Length: 162
Image (cartoon, rainbow, N blue to C red):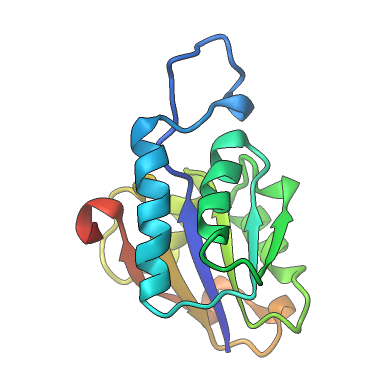
């Protein structure tokens, strides 16, 4: 069994319209919610072997707050996660080393929302910023993980849990 936690980046700032999308930082709310959410998630007993993140500034900064809760985990940039659609997200996950049994993946909507929507039995109108979606796959290897053998078991948002 493989465990995946998909984490949408925390709230980003639009205060600098001259910045390219890739370079947008977290805003004040994002800088507050990301460490709070990371701590809350850690209190739930999650223990990821690795944290993979989009290199976009807002995703990278969100991931760093979570990494502070699991400093022994692998912390790795995954460039393909920036603006990734569902097939690309799965491709990143399928490339993971087999000695990892669980991972956190940090990225963006709409790809993350679409993937979670496919796997979640409840209606999900939007995957909010800094939300964490827990996915379990019955696959034995990362290469075998697909939408057909995976299910989203939970979606936690900062507004719901903090």
